[in-house]
Image 1 (cartoon, helix red, strand yellow):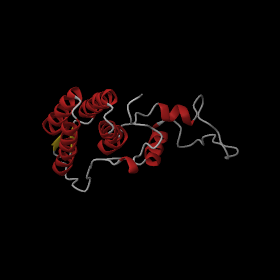
Image 2 (cartoon, rainbow, N blue to C red; image 1 turned 90 degrees about the vertical axis):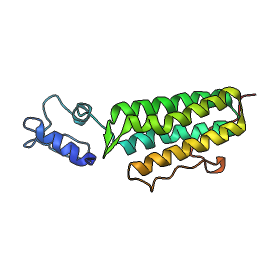
Image 3 (cartoon, rainbow, N blue to C red; image 1 turned 60 degrees about the vertical axis):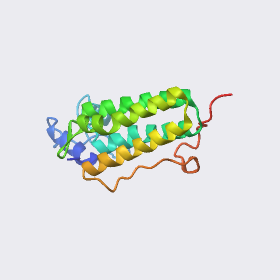
Image 4 (cartoon, rainbow, N blue to C red; image 1 turned 120 degrees about the horizontal axis):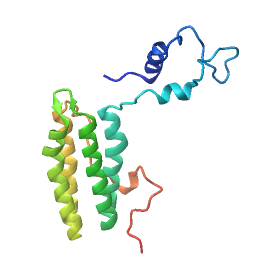
Length: 177
């Protein structure tokens, strides 16, 4: 279950001794007392932030998936290999951070759906085979969608990105000359 940040902050403040009776000094607020030796940055830095599976997928997996696809389409094999490694690492990290999502065991789900597709991508990159990469990358996108369905999120549909609609307009995906 995800707790909104404001609710989380309120809970933290209520658990700090005396916080319920004291006001925090905040810009624009006059006359409030602060907790001795603590400001808002101190309070928030002591609260562990545990992003959910969706947050991790959106922040770490989706950008790597996009960049891998665009690098492969540009046949920038060195960069595609880099992004494939980063994507694999992101999936591994997520499997360690999020053990279970609903009834889905995350690490085994990733291993059974994503790992084979990533292995095919690695082979295509090593052989610098654009057709094999295109097929393997489509297989990876299909594997993502199969995992989303098994996690009861069939509305999350991943597709092969097109360069015109890239979320990274400031990056040139062509190999260096």
